[in-house]
Image 1 (cartoon, rainbow, N blue to C red):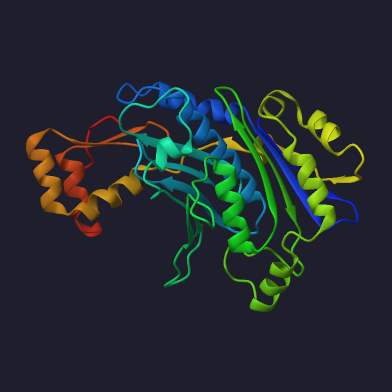
Image 2: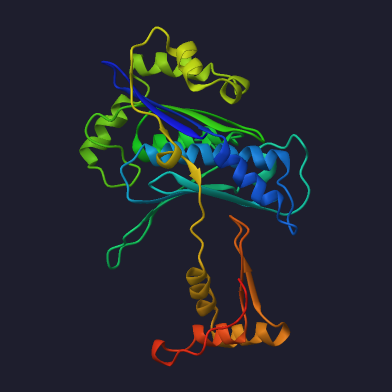
Length: 332
């Protein structure tokens, strides 16, 4: 069962989290593999998307935000876009669009950033938007301060967190066809919450920026966390990992989040949302599609569900509520 654990280092300005996605991650891969149009993800794409999904779960659980956290990378390689989305209740979904062939051992640069034009975006989309409220989005390139390409998504996200929150962060990520897992270690902010939403005060930001790289306790714990290998993260249980890494530290543990409270696969697609998308195309475009084929078919890239709208369904979409037509007999 997928699980997420939070902990604090007693008396130190350091917090940590570890996530293991098992059934939730296997569901993502199984749905993709069952898609007769796309087939399964190539191995390097599956590993990248798994690391992104684990990272998104860690980042969502690290903030107090009533909305979706969407982690996205896009660029000029065969992987045109990869997306991991995690809701406040830790329900999650993920997808990637791949065009062309990939080497079996392809890295981030070869997949997304061949010309150093790749980008990573983190979007916080409020669940209950106020009038005029927009989603918050931060975007960073897939290269470091000196223009060097970053070849691991963990390096990209650490760079992002340092820029957006002014907080030292260590991420260890790994994924295969059974498990997507991640460990996050972060120095606590000097005052209040972190700045992922871009709403903290400049004074607090300056205080945190002054502390970057200087806290000896965080630096020591970061070195320990970074010693965790890919195989260990994928194969060892949480208790064993924490004991091996931090056996000399006193940890304050929170109740693990699993089952209905923990990470799990769920898709937020719906017939209503697809209807709104078709309405956005316009009636003329919808009628043009129907003239070529008997229905409009839209598939969800995340869960694989197919939505079909015949001529009657399409007419209803563009009809005012008071003039609704009889329902279609098309089976969904």
